[in-house]
Image (cartoon, rainbow, N blue to C red; front, side, top):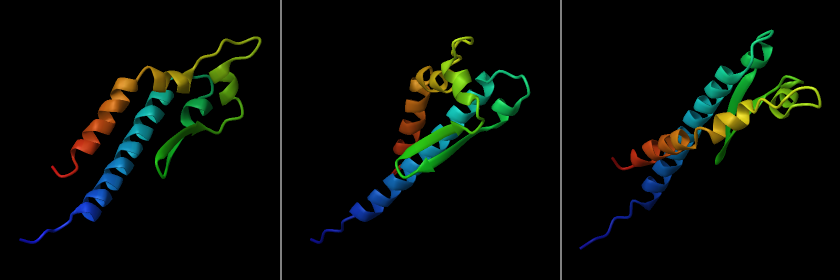
Length: 106
């Protein structure tokens, strides 16, 4: 009787599944942030982007005033665009992850 290890193949497929999940989560949260952004000039709404880095995804906005909109100021209430996009969608984010990981070996 011989034994064949598929550890490397399974590990590689798990890594690909993680990357797919992170990309889909980035797209999802990015889209949520766009839909929650107030439209004044449209610059804030059009400046959301995401980037997968190893085992994480970064969703950010490069406008100089995005942090003021997110966290508020002494004269403006916080709008929690990005924070709300994540916190209010934990179940959806978990589902994306589960769906991608369940595809491994299937």
